[in-house]
Image (cartoon, rainbow, N blue to C red; front, top):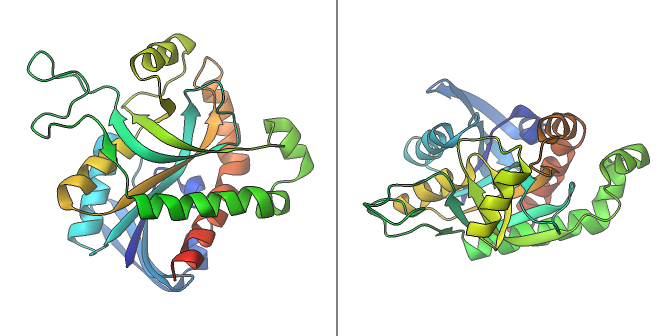
Length: 251
């Protein structure tokens, strides 16, 4: 395995490069790719930046130039379900692009010429990430998040969820928008801006992938403020320990 680890923002990957054994950096396409060993796993870490095009380009380069064989996208997302709360973790079983609409030429949400609207993540990778997330919630969360932060963000009982994540080139910050998306996709758990683009690239290149998201906000009118507070205060510690547990379990 050569693992590609993608995040959109530096805070979502904080500490991983510092944890690498024998790291070396290559700059390509205005991105820094850092290769080395993460807990005995051959890995390449990179920040994609925000949005579907940026994420798709990054995933393609990871495969074609750096030879990664598996990809994990880790970061934060907005909740799209009343039972999914700030601090919860969502592992994608499938992903769709909620802003894809080539109708009437193709059905709405279907990616033209693929016949698909939903791209399924790799079951083995998703299961291993889910196990890592469960271990983090049960055994590590109390060590890395202090009591004041738990009270501030309501992190006393975070939950793990598996299911549908939707991506689009929009920062969702409207309860009405979420209601519309939920009506169209009742199984939807979370919304973000990159995962489904990575999913399409990996599908077309035959690369196993999975996406894990920590819920930073409720994708409502307060989302922008909640997102930035959560990313700066909490997200980096989630991401580091989740990837650490995943890599150790994959050796």
